[in-house]
Structure formats: structure tokens, C-alpha cells
Length: 573
Image (cartoon, rainbow, N blue to C red):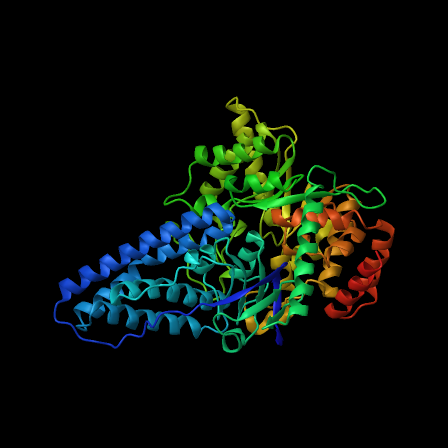
């Protein structure tokens, strides 16, 4: 029996034989070919085959995953048709005399190395992995190799891989009880998908594929990050009991579906869900969400070949508002840019797109797009309780400009005789430290705040959360981050406003007692995290949590100290 450790990325226990994911040999010897026209035909045929496969994978993913998680395949489809990549392949065939697979390999390697070399730009480095995923599929068709299909696994298994691509994860079927990877972190694509699928996952082990052989019996502890190879009978029995207890716990959580979110001493909170499209509504209702705390509208834009019309947007927003039946829906205006690009909207290439031309900056600059969205939102507001939220606000001038455009469009609609909701609220995402520090001034003008912790943490710590080399700096419990959060909440309350949180931390079981103590009003998270958060909340005394929060921001010096203190606090509940 051997135990090693990684990062617990998705709660659960998996006990099954290892399925070692071995990628096919896609090595290509650069080979000349004299028939350029024939090779170009082969190239286009392989691209079309790949397109069909990715469309099928996207359809499967759309059934099992959220709109945001499934959207990566739209980016892969866009990449298949990228004119620059295609021109590069065809040039290598016509001008260099290469066969199709050699041309794809040569061009792909050039782009991959170019992106990998951008060490100061993690976003572009990630695109290297996407190019490899897509071009490997094309090469496989050209050389007759078979891409493994995890959807064909027919017995209980734990998948072991260096990494899982989005294509791999989307194909996981019900026989897959969990997975272990060499690389990755809690915010990687595969980890997020594992939580949506509710399977155990341990990532970032650094050695899974070298230590584990195909067919080995293993145990995956998604809570602690432990992976056990060839466990003895006593260890298997212990973890089977833990898995049974967790299943029973989940059944107990399900009983809370229709109950109110409140603390042990009766303070009422709101626990909502984050969604990307109306397709995510079943999960909202099945998990007893009391609101939609974040509707990411950019997926309307990413699912279309053209800018979505006012009518298309209106229908999507109206569907969600009507489905929530009077519960609040916070809809974020378009957050395009950064890691979300549109093939039909030419945005400039930037060295650091996460700090560049994105979100509200695009909306204010190209206000014809913004006005169309605002008109659709205002019309939809008549069908439910709507909150409109502006992303990436860094200063009051931006908010005032956005609010002025909103008011102009409201006035136009009213003059046209269109009904607009009377209880509309307008707020901002707090994800830039400058806005958090000025929250006392923003609170005088907004109706609410929603803290986007994913960006707030990475901007505060100057550490990209997707960059493994600095992943240790993605510290949600760091006292400096907690102080910013506390100040934002207090600032809103002083002005009679409310604060929600829609980042990953909202559903974090370590952060939750601190946030309760700080008086956070609304917690919005992945739908699958709602019931366990409601359960923990019911065990908490707000007075005890206030003292816990005070100690976290005033006495603790490191993230680890805060986490240890919270675990000790929870052990005594």
C-alpha cells in the first residue's frame, strides 16, 4: 500500500481500478509530398471530421455541465476555422511541399512554442494547450490514430492522467468515479467540471502517471487530496464507510432544498446560484437556490456567430426571470475580453488581456452593443425581480457613465410605451482592489455590491489563479483579502445597501463562517454547493462567527493561520 498527496479538487471518495489514460503516438516525421492539392483535400477532410467530433462533445457537455464549462468547445471550434492557422497549414503544403500531417505539426508546434514562451502572459500560455488539443485531433485523423474516448469506459474506474483536456472531461460517463492528474489546481477546467459532475478528484499530484499502473486498485480522497495505491482490506473498508457517510450526508442536505438559509440563531441569509444560460435552470431549482446571484451573459455572445439581437437577449433574460418566480436575478452585463474572445468582434491582441480592454471598458467604448443589451434587460425587468450588475468597475466615473446610458435607454423605452420593472436594482462587481478600497464612496451611489473573489484575489495578490507556478499565492483566506471583503460589506451596510458574493469563495466551506461573521448578505455559488452551504450555515451562531471574523482580520498574519483557526472553530460546532 502506498499513499501520495495532491490537491483535493472535488469532494468525494472513489474506490476503483485505475484507468491509465494513454494518449496515442501522434509523433509525425516531417515528410515531403508532391501532391499539394491532394494533401490540402486531406487536410480539410480531417478538419471537418474534427469539427464533427467537437460538436458532439460540446452537445454532450451541454447536457451535463454548465454553459460556462461547455463553452470551451466553442473556442475549439473557432480555432479549427482560424484563418491564420489554416493559412499556415496550406502554406506549408504548397510552399514547403509537406504532407498534411507534417504541415499541421510544423505550424502547430510553431504557435504552441510561441505561446508557451509568453511567460508573463498566462492567458496566452493556456491557448497553447488549446491549440495542442485541437491540432492533435486533426493529426490523429490524418495518420489514422485513435483519440481515446473516455465515454466508452464500461466498468467502475478512476481515470489517471497527466492532465485532462476539456474534451476528455466532458466525455466522462457514470462509470468514472473520480480522477487523478499530475498537474492542475482547484480552479482548472477539469477541477471545476469534476465539482459539477460531483465526482471525486485530486489534481496536481506531480507523479500520478508514474506511480499508478493501469488496473491498480486505488482510493481517491477528494476531501484531503490523498491517493492510495493497492489499499489493504482494512483501508478499503474505512473509505467505503466514509463514502457511505458522505452519501448519507448528501441525502440529509437534500432535505434542506425547500428550507430558508439561516444561521443557528435565526439570522436570514440568501444562498443563490451562478448560471451561464437558461440551460442551467434545472440545477438552480433542484438545489433550492433562493436567487440567481450571477447570470453570466457573455455566453449569449459566445454561442452566436453574430452579436445577439435585442430580441434574442430579451427572451433569454425573460425566461430566467420568469423561472425564478419573484426571486431576484442578478444579471451581469457583457464581460467579453480577457479569456473570452468573440470571433466576430475584433478585439485587439494584448500582452495582458486580463488587465486590458474587457468587460465594462468594451461596453462603454462600443456603446451600441451595450445599449442593445441594456434595452433587452430593461424590457425583461417587467417579468421578475432584476438586478443589473456592471463588471470590472474600477472607478466612480465608469459607474456613472454606465448608469447614465442605462437611464437614457430606460427613458427611451418608457417614451415608447414599454413597461419597465419598478423594483430594478443597479450594482457593480467588486473585483478590482481600487473599487474595494473606495467602497464607502461607491456605496452612496449603487444599490448593491457583488464581490467577485476569483479576480479580486488574483489582482490583490498579483498572481494569476490559472498559473501553476504562482498558484500558492491564490489565497482566499489571506488577511489582506479578508480585510478588503470586510470593508466592502461594512461600507454597503452603512448606506443601507447589501453585499453579495459570486466568486468561488462564496461556496467555500472554510470561508463561509468568516463571511457569516462579516455579515455578507447573499452567497452565490455553483448550484451543487448550495445545500451543503445551507447545512453548515444552520450550525453557525452569528455572534461566534463575528468573533471568528474579527480574529481572522486582526490577529492572523497568514492564510494558513486563518484556515487552521476556522477548522478548529468548525470542529467545536
